[in-house]
Image (cartoon, rainbow, N blue to C red; front, side, top):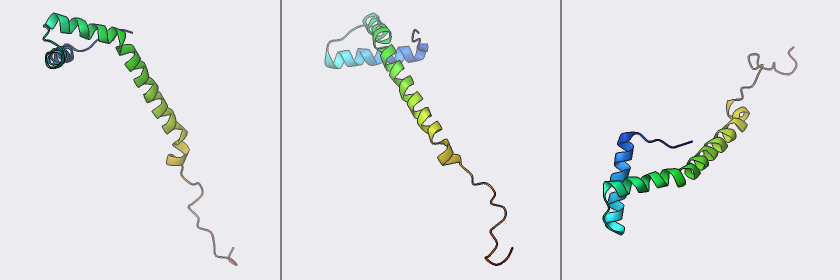
Length: 87
């Protein structure tokens, strides 16, 4: 599954990559930053995506396992027990 970002997000990330490179490595242009972003999305993105899906799945499964504990409602509570000796 290819990761496709909205154009505005891609532009923001390209600007961020350019800034990072300028401050830590050397200045690069939009083309180099776009190529680096594309590489990251293709090579690193699926691993991050898969881990996020696994984390979300574990979270949901944990909540489903606790469903009885968090959503349990006692039954037959309308009638209060009669005092001893009555009824």
